[in-house]
Structures are given as structure tokens and as C-alpha cells.
Image (cartoon, rainbow, N blue to C red; front, side):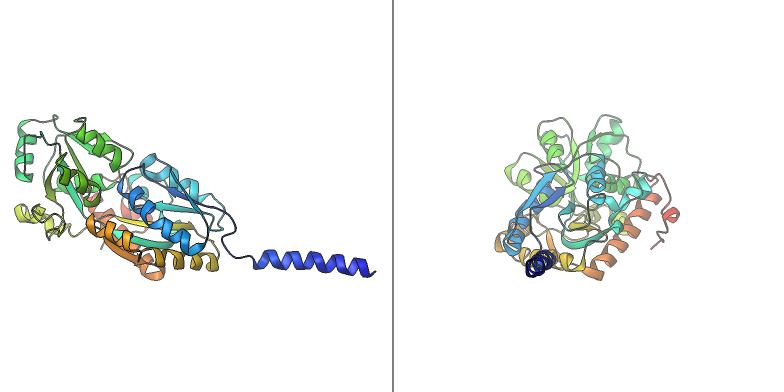
Length: 330
């Protein structure tokens, strides 16, 4: 009888220990929805080692490309909601519904943290026969279907910028898709494409090295890191209707992830975004650190989706109306 009591107590003790085990007990999988070398990849690989230190555990990052990030999103959305698989993504999923890529977006996830924001820039190969936005538009008009524009595919940053441009003027160009801005900028430098719209931080090193040239910054204010690059509104004030606009980077867990696990991950990344080398990387590449969580993050995502989905719809480049998904006009 005494032995049976001891055995029962031992089992109860093991169960209690397991229940009280602190997260994380094993490796966390961080699924990056874009290719190696791009802006999303660079941001995640810079900040995550500091989150690992705060967690006292490992986060194994993996690049899963394809479908404008939809393959990565779907992979994480079907994972167990236990905090051991997280999505490391950019803004693209908020346009999946209106672009016809699927029924899931970031509202099927809990935002761990929105890390930072960027500013779009249009860059060209160094041999491109134009140096400014007006010169580019004039050249395209005289040489239809000759200029090759790199693209992330429908719903990516490049397609939003292209949508803005198309809303103002018809552009007879060739669109060539790539799995992220890293491969696209490599193609630009190799003369496989002529022009690419990317986040400033992805292009800044190439601009500084002279392997690509900036055409215009899609913003209303000049950049501190690239002060000589003109803003689109300085030559084409009609773009003020769309700006300021920009991409963002965030980490997301499937809905249903326990609150304490979400809290642990948020606390780790809250420390990580303050790391000096991460702050330096973001500043040097022209990114703004956000560090946004909770309802504030949800509100940001809601407003971003509303503004951008309707911008794209009004430009005539969406497959469905935002109204079909209850996305109200801003």
C-alpha cells in the first residue's frame, strides 16, 4: 500500500513538473516568408539572436518562399498554437484576400511584435537610360513594353508602388516576379531587370556601393540616410493622395497560442529591439523601429489593410473588392 502511494505521488509530481515547465523547452521554428538576403530576412536575423538570449533558448530560422509569402503563412497557420512555430513576415498577407491568394491573413494570428517600418524607393540599374522619375516615365512612353520591372508578385511592396503609378498613368512595362527583394536586386545588378521598387533598407548598400542608382523615394519627406534622393511628391505632387505609405516587419503566432507564451515571446523581442547593433542596422538602412504589440498592433494592421486594399482596388489591380471581406473604405 505504501509503495502504491509513493508511485501515485511520483506520477502526480511528474505531471505537476511538466505543467509548470517554463516556455521554451525546445527549439522554436521561425519561418521567414521571404528569401535569404532580403530586407525581411536581414531584419529577422539581426533581431532574433537577442530574443534568443532573453529567452534562454534557440529560434531556428528557415526561409520559406513562394506565393508572395502565402506558403510560409499557410505553413505556420496550420502548426500547433503552442509558440514553437512563429511567422516572421512583412506586410503582404494583409492583401491576400483582395488579391485572391487565400482567405487567411494576419488576423488569423496574434501579433507578437511589429518590429519596424520602411520607406519604398525606386531603383534602377546603373546603365538605365534615365535618372529621374519624369525621365523614366517619358522613356517608357517612347519605348513601350521594353523596360523590365522587377516584382514581388501581386500584393507585394512592388505591386503596391506599381499600383500607385498605374493609378496616375498607364505604364506599358514588363513585370518579372521574384521571391523577395534580395533575388530581385541581384537580378537588377546583373541586368536581368531594369527597375525595382523595394524598401529603402534593402537597396541602400547597393546605392552606396554604386551598383544601382536611386530614382525616387516614395515618401513626402526626404530620407536622412539618402538625403540626395528626391521624393516623388517633389516632382509629382499628385502622389500625396497615397502617401506616406510603407512596408513593415513583424512576428506572429497562430491564434490560440497561450497568453503566457505570447507574453514571454513579446518580452524577449521587447528586449531584442533595444539591442545596439539592431538599432544601428535599422537606422543605417533607413528603417524606423516600432516595437508595437497588443491592441496597438491590431489597430495598426487594421488601418494598414484598409488604406492599402482600397488604394490597390481604386488603381484597378485587385481581384476582389475590399467590401467583399468587410474592409471598410478609409
